[in-house]
Length: 125
Image (cartoon, rainbow, N blue to C red; front, side):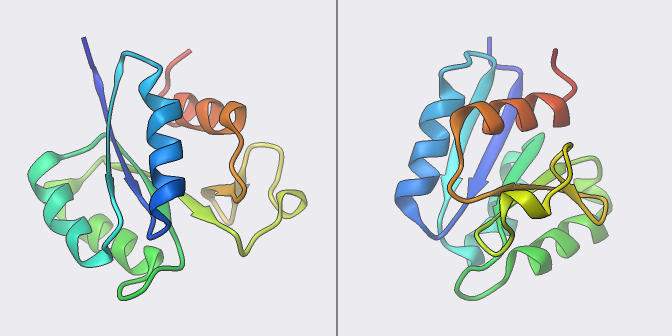
């Protein structure tokens, strides 16, 4: 039974599908993707994911703006966010995948790092 709802947000549709494919191998994850930044908030409000993998640079709303809207909503309290970015290099991220208190995955994303970050964020061993 699927226990964890994960929303993947990236305007690069192929990357979003790649992430969805990797995560869907774990039967406890229910994964959907959104590639249009204007559809993220309505999707989050309707679907209420446990975790959002959120690209930072997108047309329209930027990932940090979307994250701020989510954090400001009491209705969406507790939704975890992992940022995805090509702006930061792997060597710039500390060993826990955190910069400034926020978890990041750097592009290109590898399956092992993705699964580890998601499991850690959702507190799954």
